Length: 123
Image 1: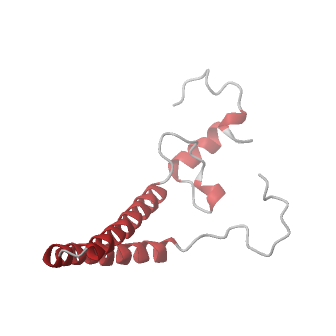
Image 2: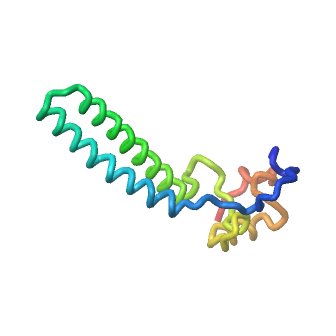
Image 3: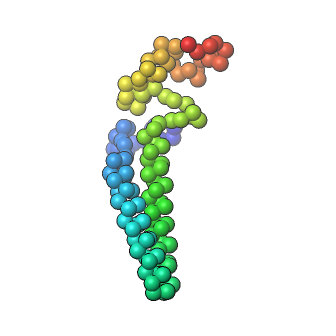
């Protein structure tokens, strides 16, 4: 990876504050959705075009917050089917049953390093 030989002072295990991001996204979603409803009712009551634009902007903020929440949910769920599931020990976790099984099957490295990986049945 291109960041291995960096000389910065940031820690190698730095993590983003996902809990704060999730709370802020929920707040943005609720406030923006309420604002969009309010602006739509103002636009219908007054007939002024400015309220329609305000409603559109508030709705766009609500959509961005909802997408961010979906991304955070997917990150929390972990890798799904498409990518390589690494053991939790690499990321600071215990690895669970999958990580222990992987270490028993391949004590010297990763399964992708084993040329016979696709030829033998997995227990």
